[in-house]
Length: 167
Image (cartoon, rainbow, N blue to C red):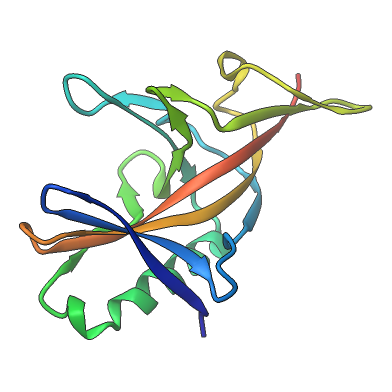
């Protein structure tokens, strides 16, 4: 069974957000290795803003972890009338993918991207990210969001660090 608490932190019009923390009020840290993210780093969603995210291709362990969080929240009585907007998406080209958001500040990606070299690990620029190479990620569940107007809810997952072998 999952053990976490929700702390309300933001209401934006009709959307409420709650931080997801463990019972000690710490961030729940997760790791996933040897996956690819073939698309989705930055897309225009609205006129003025972009979404910074990676869509990670299927990984059995990752699917299970995301399912556990979503299923746990789905059991709350408060959500019986709401639809879950899952982070697991069926994509025609890539199969099952999982949506992860990147950290941003002023519409710029701040999630750390690191190259793994033979002898060390160094911080790299996102322009050097290669969509056809495997990555390792450190991430955490960021928030539970609830859209009361449209009767929907979901969990946002944030990537803290991306590691990729340098060519």
